[in-house]
Length: 193
Figure 1 (tube, rainbow, N blue to C red):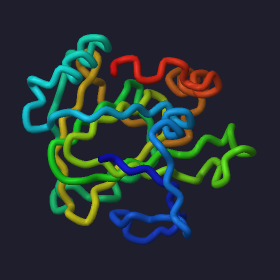
Figure 2 (cartoon, helix red, strand yellow):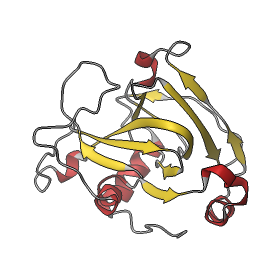
Figure 3 (cartoon, rainbow, N blue to C red):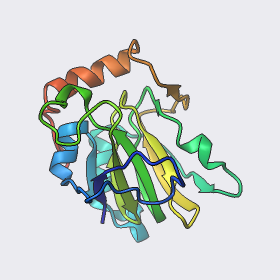
Figure 4 (cartoon, rainbow, N blue to C red):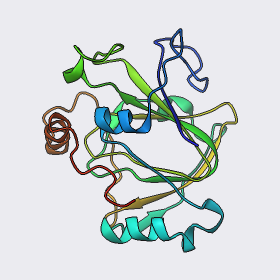
């Protein structure tokens, strides 16, 4: 089951958990309110037959999928953890192992978030069966854990243009839409459950 927490600012091995001291976990509801990231649990052993996944794909028009495989020996960690955004939603369905996805805390909510600020990151630990929907326009990073391995399914609306845009990219339309939705509090939470 997914776990979410505020991340420390240490620069050492990014595959480690990096909790602040004392650790500060946040709920999936709080994660959605701060970032717009949605969470679902999918039957990873039989995902082709999973009704929830089928409903999500149909309602959101996810017509394209791929299955990335990352292993540190063949894909350098530094390339994964650069801060970036994409023009379309990122929808990973974790098939095996455990990864971290890092999301920046909202700079707009600084005054009400105890650990707020523009570069205080929230870490999401996802494992087999976890499906998260990362909205277009959010800055995010990705890293493996100490097992150095991930297999996942990703779903897209149409064939993806897989081009990350490194930070800063405030001028981009997807970023502007994201910030507008964030200011509105992401009103369409969990439409598919």
